[in-house]
Image (cartoon, rainbow, N blue to C red; front, side, top):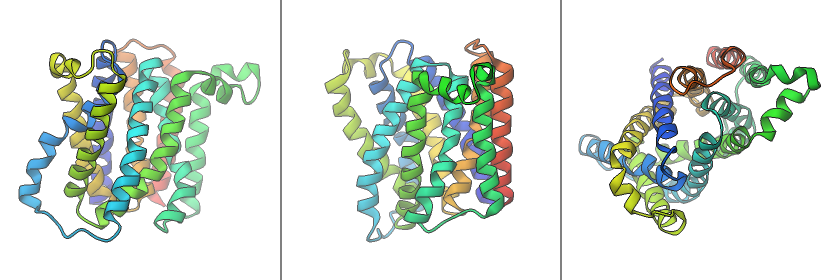
Length: 287
């Protein structure tokens, strides 16, 4: 039960992080924002090591850190590109596909597989994504899916969902071979270092942007750090597929934030689609 509560808190703070990221991306490039997600989370996470201590590292830790961290860097950059290019309320729901991809990756990587009720929940999540763009139904049965994939934001976020279905398993391996906080810190240091050099290489304003826009970037890292702490602790208590599925409740919150904060349109079908996705998540939890 504690794992479920922590996963819900993960969803809430992840949605707040998305709001600040969307705002920041108006004037800041995606590479700098991606760097900030991890780097500015570290000051809030590193002090926790004084309370939890440095654990004995298992044999699979460094392999999980390198492989999972490298894939996570790609996912973060694509994530920021996605929410920068399209509405929050149509882009964020696409990450609800992660549980579907986890059906392929989790059995292979950590030996976990949901039961029949969990599988139905995953299919309902897919149905919800169809409803997100149901207005396109008049152009053909598969038109809602095709329309989503034609738009840059949802297309990129679908790629993120697939990458996260892999990195979520590496997260579990990393946590099991160390501790939740130690894993977050080492993963944050690794990704921050690589992303910093990426900022120097790709960003037009380079590192100057980090110094001048720190008031915008720090909250992104803060809420990212809080979300990560809850997530890593949760996956150590229950199945990866369940934690990531519950985390996708953030899609409903993102639809609300998109409508109320960014004045995005199509709230009715997007809200209905995201609610259906959450129903799928509930089935997975009950399973």
